[in-house]
View 1 (cartoon, rainbow, N blue to C red):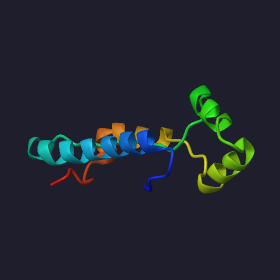
View 2: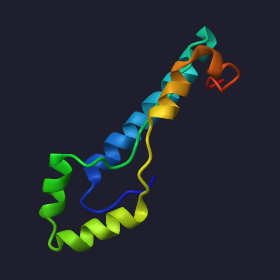
View 3: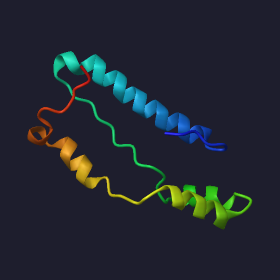
View 4: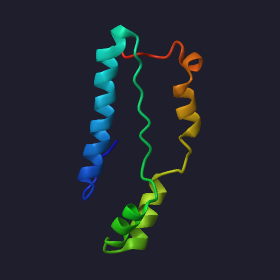
Amino acid sequence: MVGKPNEVLYSAAKGGLIMLAKGAAIEWAPRDIRVNVVAPGLTATPIIEASIQRNHDPEAYRRERESRVRPVSTAPLTALLRGRTLCAGLPTGR
């Protein structure tokens, strides 16, 4: 994870979510409670599109953003994390 100018709120939110999960995993591990987080990157929404359009060169900014990311589905990972038997033996933060 890397911070970027003009993305302070995004960076803070993503970092906070990740550290919340890490802290909870350590705190709850003695009770055999596993904590995971799925934190995908930038997702195309009207708010994100508006943010891109506010940039001084929207198309160049879009190309730069798209060159750093690769669209993936979080569905398989989410399904894996939800399945109790599939998660047996994964780290619990201990």
